[in-house]
Length: 504
Image (tube, rainbow, N blue to C red; front, side, top):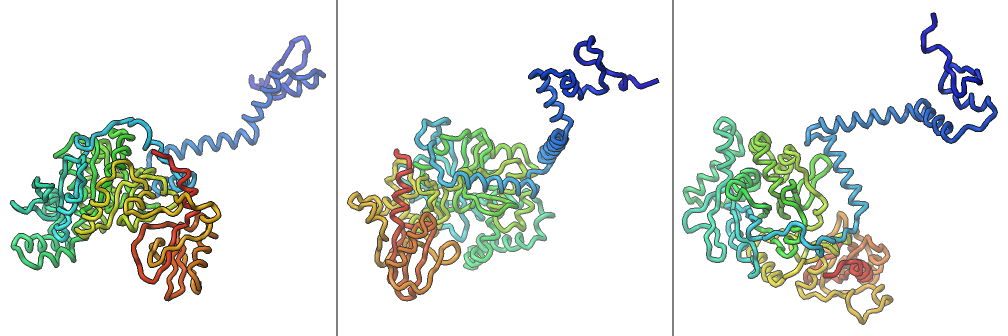
């Protein structure tokens, strides 16, 4: 007896008495009836071919492959190298598509109004070897400073009368390294060579030995990695309801008028981890010296929701070289990744040597770094004391009283297309690496022409009279006086970039 599926099927009008074995042959049947198929029949035939033909099988395979990839992505740990590699390349592609960002949020009404005095806490990270910087950091705060809450963390604790001085207000210095070691217990730390170095260092400080300063120089960098996680734990315990937590080194300067509109643009309940992105596909982390911003959402995700990640970080701090990288790894385990959309707002250099690239020309700048000597921090404070609106990277010229040659109204486009020369100065700021060096250039003007010929790949040039070397840089700096050099910015490119900047 034949299977029911093999019974003939009658399609269309039964009076036609035409039988076919497969429903898929309906389009052939219609043709046999010498009449044109209706649009409905044509669409049904097309859909069947798409479903059962080669294209349909490929589509089904891709669908199931997509489901597997999504499932695999969900199941992979946050710090898996595959996951990190995919994120790295996606972010790199996004940066390529948005190579010249324009910060519209600077001029928009604040979506999340913020008060720097009540909504933020600044965590100033210092150390015994750099203790003279702490007071300089506070002295550099402008008269219009809005910060009110601070926490000073270090590898030693201040004694009465040795606190940091915030314009007459003493601030105790907290030893967060001891906090890290206490959380691990003696069994996990006493046999560690880094701990042994620290215990000898701490003993020298306690006994007032001169050796303490030498030990600080030789072991301070290693010990610094022990401060990050415990410092944030302490900040959260003392200020649990802050919207934003700012972690800065004692040689980092914060530009408050640029910082405030950024924070007012972001929802602090979202886990934000923001800073100057460095590293590779294996891990991207915010450079500690350039400053790190963490939202309430990020801090609660780390400290409240992921205590195991915190304890793991304490263990890893006994061997990790860089504390800022350790912080990133710990946050990733809590599901918080570095938001690289705002990385271009942070500088890892002092103001005069900050590298102004084309993609940052019109963007605000929030931090400067490398102000390790107290007099340099004081000068930065004096220079930026009167800044009352968001500071763009290109505005650094104005802060130091430098005339922007591309703004001179008397210069025509033809004149601006010719190299602008400044004797005994350096606007290129470097040699080797990204800075191209051309040997045997006889005149400064020839060096300038080579820069202009490179278009957007050259922001500034410097010619050395003695060596006849021509330096062609992808950035420009305000710079300082340097004997025996002739230099200049690419005025034509700078004017084109500035014309695209939003005005405020």
